[in-house]
Length: 252
Image (cartoon, rainbow, N blue to C red):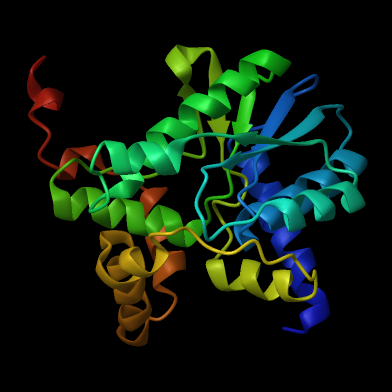
């Protein structure tokens, strides 16, 4: 596929996912989580393009959580967002300090993600946003499925359109059909700013479960070509009668 065709493919996949899972309706106020990584940055561009072309009207807002990590600077992101005309709010938080206070350095992601969700939901309430939009892609869904399976926490993944905050909002993931490599290839032509990386990035890449499973997926693709596409198909073809959930038999 030509490089010039890649963005069109990404937009088609996002549009199909949005239609398949009824993600966006007339009058929605969407709050996009923008971390500065290529996934969320491409998501913001995809949604801006959709907003201009869609037959329905919806509003777009963006939010970035500044965790206070020494290795991250959000100034380049703020400048880029201003150039693009994004309505971006950067919220400064004490998350980095709280990770140290709670002695959670060995597993920082759980605490960090929980705290970030709280700040994002708070800002969503402030601006009246009814949907949070996250940049998780097909590879993220595959890895999450494997993590649940290997950890024994159930057959589950990141849903494309799920209730959140006690049902007061919904979380949608328009890039759920898009493979990671497609997003990265599309991002190359965009010249996104370098905001740095989380203070625990090297540690997580070396020892984190998610990074391990991402590497495993790449290795498995050699023996099971297009494994991400096939796993996505399996997630869309759930057969409960051939699983072992006893709750399905309590009423029989």
